[in-house]
Length: 129
Image 1 (cartoon, rainbow, N blue to C red):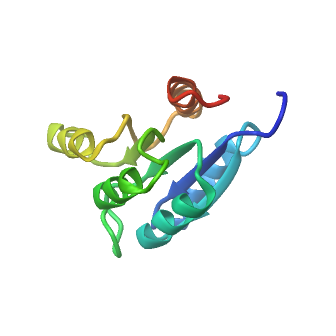
Image 2: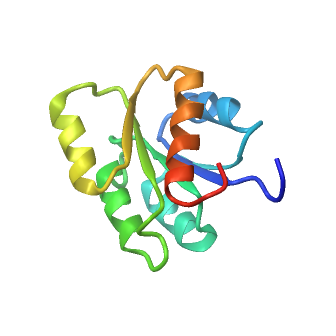
């Protein structure tokens, strides 16, 4: 890969999920991780990641609210947000789409599907994936 690796921000309140996602992504991307939705918004505003992975259900700030807040930040409207959730139902899909999510993956996440989805979304947003 030439130049700097793209950055992926992960927000999930489960430390296990953060580790799993980080382990899959870290050889391909710079990974920033947090267990807080509020902190995810702060990190996104400061670091302008190339993609964001969000859990829908977090205790401090719901993933859909995090997505809306990130998309409202200057310069972040085009950053793809991929929801990673255990809620594989139509209502969850609709919530994620309405919040501005680019895609949704269901737990447990298939590593290759995760890598393919992140790369596709970063390329689609004009990033270096």
